[in-house]
Length: 138
Image (cartoon, rainbow, N blue to C red):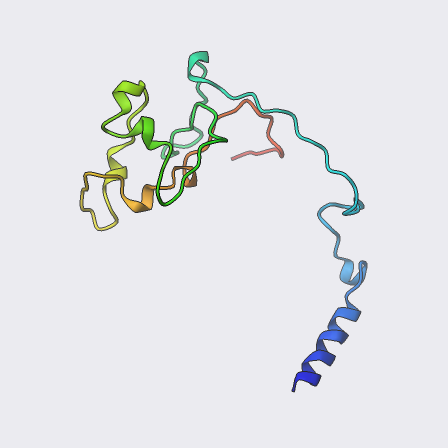
């Protein structure tokens, strides 16, 4: 049985070539050994600039108006909660997280952030003045 599987795999691999079936690589003719281009630095939109980017749809989660590259979220700590929790948001002069972040899927309200809302960047993204990578008509 192993021999048969090996033979089938060998035949399949040997039949797959760069120009078989007209399949083109997404990177075009660029070889893997070519060096990639370093992207421009990002201009973060800061709260002090008083430039907030408007929401593109009604239920869009708020954008993060500061850099978060060094913020680490793990099972033991969530850096966002140092400033945005109920207890600390006033002292940090930060926006308090929404009440929806304290309600679990069953509709029960909790005193602490519910686990389904723990990883903030699954919904919230930093706002920048970056040019779109591709045209978008959304």
